[in-house]
Structure formats: structure tokens, C-alpha cells
Length: 156
Image (cartoon, rainbow, N blue to C red; front, side):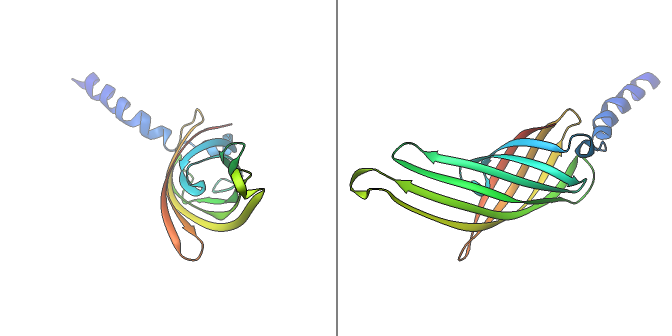
């Protein structure tokens, strides 16, 4: 009976101990794929930590093909509320969007613009390097639009 309690405690507390590890200090870079989010459909991003609780991030996304394309380029910062691997976070930055078409009678028309984003969310980062993040993205330009984001990636 006593051994069963010890085994149960180890099984329950071992995963909780990994939440206290500080893998952001050990692996200060991450590469992620965000579905939804600040670039609407998807984005590929790179983040570098400048401290244990602050990271700078750049990202890119492209939609379309040879005749019509939309390119998103983003940059910003993410602030982590705790030093733990499972923590709430807040991101903010700017997204540059450019769109062009050479289809049909439109010739070589193109347009570009910028919008801002603020993204409260929650991140879980394993000591092995797996990154999972869920966020609510508030896209701001002449009003605002709320869009969900789900991020998976690897830290190194």
C-alpha cells in the first residue's frame, strides 16, 4: 500500500516538475508554424529570447500562386508573465501586407498596407524543445478584428 502511494505521487508530481524547468534559458530560439493568427491563415516564425521573459519575433506567410499572391511579413515582441514552461504570454507588433495580381485585364496591379496586432495567449514549452501556444489575436486597423491562433514548433 505504501509503495503504491509513492508510485502514484511520482506519476503525478513528475510531469508537474517539468513545468518548473526553464527551457527558455537553455534553448533561446524557436521556429514555429502558427495556424490562423496574426497572418490570417498561417505563418512561419522565428523567435529569439533577449531575456528569459522577453522574445523578439519575425514571421512570414504567402498565399496564392503565380497570377495572384498575398505576402504577410510580421515583427514584434512577446512577453512571458512567468519564468515557467507553462505560462501566459502577451505579444504585440506590426504586420506588413502586400498583394499583387497579373491575371486577366488587371495587368500588374498591387497594393500594400500595415496593421497592428495584440495577442494574449498561453504557451507550454517542454524541456525537450516542443512548443505549443494558443492565442487570441486582435488585429487592429481602423477598428479591430479578433482571430484565433494555434502554434506548434521546436525550440533550439
